[in-house]
Length: 122
Image (cartoon, rainbow, N blue to C red; front, top):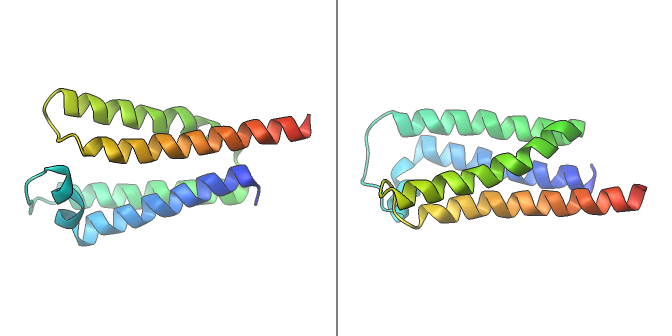
């Protein structure tokens, strides 16, 4: 697995783990971000979606799907922008930006590895 693919693989593992936590212990995840305790099914539904999304990342990394890897860079940055927008709108507490920062940090790691890979090959 290339270093670029490894960034996506690691991010996929993170998303799968987060999804499992949202399914099994949603209030443990959302509590520190200022959300009230919930018994609604939607947070668990989101957890299922996150697990599947994480599995896409893992498989894209294993198959070295360069197009997907490139798409994730802007997508993960968009998550930070979206979460910041929710905080600015007063819908979510400021700590939610930390999740977006993890996404953007992962995107930066992938972008840096892509740049290094391109320099090394040509």
